[in-house]
Length: 126
Image: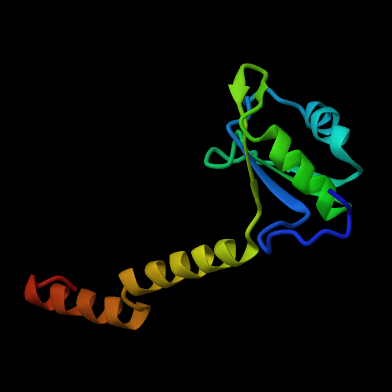
């Protein structure tokens, strides 16, 4: 495939990698993903809900495509990798949805204060 070929619109320089060993080092990831081209950045998840994941950002979109095609399903450190293109729109929408859910599920402070005062009066608490 030539570098000038058109690629799927979802293809981009940033890859999202799942199912990594918790013991994998950034150097291990640079060694593995670096075989496909120059890497701009690797960010590993360190929080409990992001451990075992990483973002790999290539300098060139075609290097990212090659890595995604070759490494998705690849057995690395006894784990089968899941390599996807990072979809920023999906991440932003998910964050907005979480924020909307959090704000709609909790009444605002004034309403909560009002409910508290009603309960205090109801139960004779000063």
